[in-house]
Length: 102
Image (cartoon, rainbow, N blue to C red):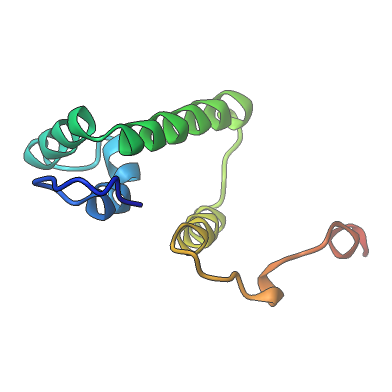
């Protein structure tokens, strides 16, 4: 995604590190660059708002459940693939029928 405007920090770099920003897992200097970018770029700010809302919803609905680390890693990996426009391998997609069968 790019708004087409030149920025000190490129849109793709901001979006690549969006979850680190949301989770407060980056140095202050990098966080400040992303905040500055959001002030200049409404499409990235909109994407940030959407991801922040999804994160809050998931926390509210699933915040009490313990999630196995390997499952979390797989989900994040698949989301990264989808965001990058890659196709998720068919063997990674489980139908509800297959999941419900013994």
